[in-house]
Image (cartoon, rainbow, N blue to C red; front, side):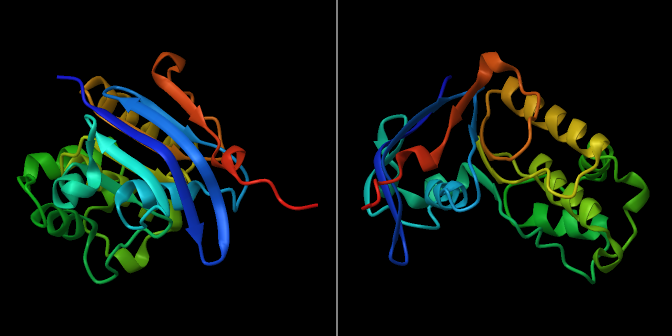
Length: 215
């Protein structure tokens, strides 16, 4: 069954700065929405707004035309969010961290599921390495591996390829393709070309919805 996530006439205020106004989007199962634009254009704020971490000044978010605000718990249960910080516990090994993360929700901690997530991100050799010893790129791969252990219809990803090498970016692309082929959807803030199938991709530039400045 196809799901639909949409925003209508969204307005976002951070501090005293109006980041965007009158912003609309629609995303369906199997589709990806890329957020493009320079730093400060509102990409991260829009993702936080979509995740329910930041309330819009006005406008509406809806899932299958039902306002998200009516059931925030259900919305949180359907999404996975990755911000700028990887949130890797320094004292846990990679395997322990993934098992702990899976235990937070309705997810599989079976060894086979953990092994599959490690393999998908190319971090099997790091399974017993503690978080404090990981490089920035390795930490990012571990953070992305978490998405394979907790099912979510909607992925919200803020600069997910930061720190990744060419192999890491390719694995991320495969992760997104797998998610979309399974009926999931993703919103990705990025500065690089990800090579996502154009038939499933939409582009939104939050900065284009910024209010005009007085001259």
